[in-house]
Amino acid sequence: MRGPIDYIIVGVDGPKFDGSILSALATAIDSGAVALVALSVVAKDTDGVITTLDVADAGDSYIVEFAEKYSASSDLINQDDIDEVGELLENDSAAGLLVVEQLWAKPLKKALLDANAYVLAEGRIHPDAAAELNEGSN
Image (cartoon, rainbow, N blue to C red):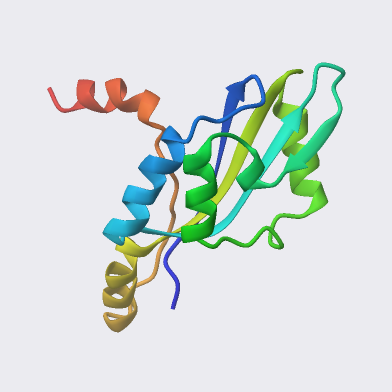
């Protein structure tokens, strides 16, 4: 049984990550909240040429350490995915495409299954919409 699988695409200006994002991801992995399923780095150069980068070549030494410690498949991310990410990028920028399993939700999923319950709908409210949620609680 798997927990929900989510993807996140994070863009940065200039094709270089500094490792701070992966540090936060490592904390989430180490806490057991998420499992890393797949990871890919996509860059678009100043001429608009899209390439995928080896995570270990994408930035500083922390990124190399992360890639060695946390294995992630890049096989699950195909050329269509890379092309879609590339279309989102401006020239001279990069994006990390991250696929994670939400491990914290597995006990909830099991409880739902055991109770013969089923999901009628699901979605995600983006954190930027939090102000709207806070307005409704007053």
